[in-house]
Image 1 (cartoon, rainbow, N blue to C red):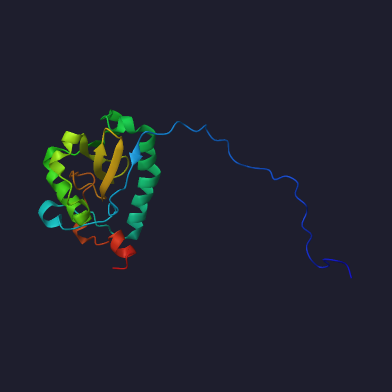
Image 2 (image 1 turned 90 degrees about the vertical axis):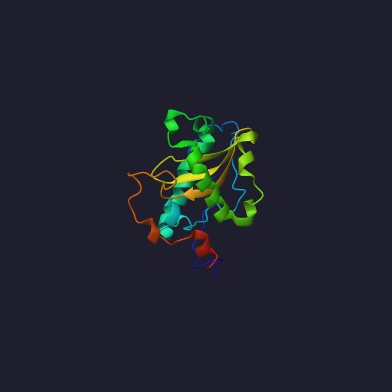
Length: 192
C-alpha cells in the first residue's frame, strides 16, 4: 500500500510572496500624549439635564459604537498628527478651543459627577496657574471631547464625551429630545 494514499498532497513552498503595501517611512515620535488616566471618561450622566440642558447619555449601543469609532479613527489620529495646531487655536481646527469661562463650572461639575472620588482631590482653580486648561475638541459631526490639556507636557486627559454638543448649545446640532436617552456604556458593560 502506498504511503499517504487518499490524502491531498501539499506542495513544498520555497518562498512566500509578501503582498504588504509600501508604507511611508516612520515619522519621528509625536510629542503629544492622549492620556486616559481617569478610566471613567466614557461614562455618562443625565444629572444636569433638567437644570443645565446637558446630558451625555446615548440613544443606544449603536450610537456609542459610532462615536467611539469617530474618536479612534478621526480625533486621535488628528491629535497625534497635528496637536500643535489643534491646541494653538488654528482656524483649521475651529471646533477645538479652551472651554469658555461661562461653561467651566458646568464642565467641572459634570467631570466630578462622572469620575466621583477619582478626581475629588483636583483643585480646578489652580489648573491655569500650572498651564493646564479645560479644552473642548471637535473635528467632525457633533461629538466633542472635553478634557484637560497640559501645555507643558503636550498631554490631553479626556474627562468626558459631549456626545450631543450640549455644552455649547447649537441650533444646528441640538434638535433631538436628549432627555429620553438612557444608554450608558459603562452601566451596560458592567451588567448594570
